[in-house]
Image (cartoon, rainbow, N blue to C red; front, side, top):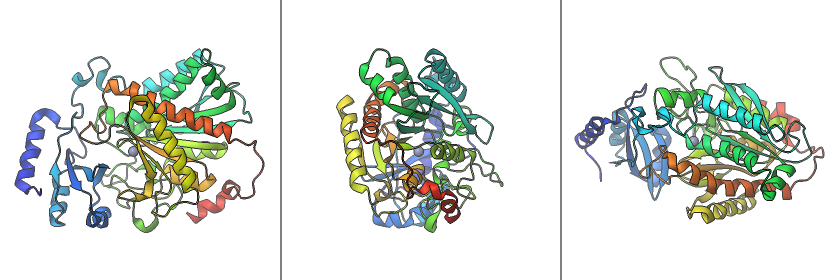
Length: 426
Ligand SMILES: [Zn+2]
């Protein structure tokens, strides 16, 4: 059903009046609409430059404001207003026990909890500062392994969280993996074996400046806090990695105001450089980058619809992770190649890690499945079940890495030996 402009403005006014008004530097975008997925929409999607939240069941969900609606009407694209189950916190009342972010971690709470873990389990937890954000917050990595101070000849696996500021649950899942491994090491022989035979690296908060901004200023903020001039802020750091960065100008944007602005150059942002440098200093055998929402497991390529030469293997591991997840709480995570969804993405971390080393590289979009199910606003009670089901996927990927691990031998075909050449090409 195509809403008239008047109809929409009415819905907009009702939503504002019901107390969901956001303190925002982008106040015009504050309501959710859905658009039916279609080929003609796919053709227009880059030009429309919408804040795409996710797609599910034949619909694309969008965070929109009056200017977006004008564009849609001009392009004859039909949309309907949606009412999310939960609304962004406009006051601390939403989380009475834990302040405005409740059981979710702020930057400082996460720093404290990681350092406490290191203090309690000094033989298996070590916290590293792998670089500073734009606003000079530390980007932390936590290593979990036996003999944690040593670099041992063991499988290495990387877990990343919170490239996108508003995706709070994506901090919790990788952090809780580290906590779970540390706390169960002494009593659970399966966990002990995994930790003894691998080196697990966790960066739960790639975008600390953005996260703080979502807690204190604008809950829907996605990017980092780069000042692009002319009152435009933020680079989408999951469009800033150096493989096929900006290719064909589709799947990321040149416009500094866009939610998918890719920055002035590949690795222009200190947050992506920190992840890059960690990745290149290790020999990872697998990685997962957590996002929310839509409950899917995605693998490269994202920049093209063409499959990679390892498509079958990537799919098999994704299917296994999906089955392990479903066995825990019954929730189904769909899986597939990233670039075959409605829109392409370029400059994301998984395309880059996959291009560099060919290792299994996944984006897991955590629950809920859609905007109506709560979108970015998972409840506090969601943290544990979402973590538990993803624990099954994460441990299975670690296990897979251990089983397939071969001690390091120099490989002339490893792209990292030609690193400067690769960067120049991009
Ligand atoms: Zn995301």
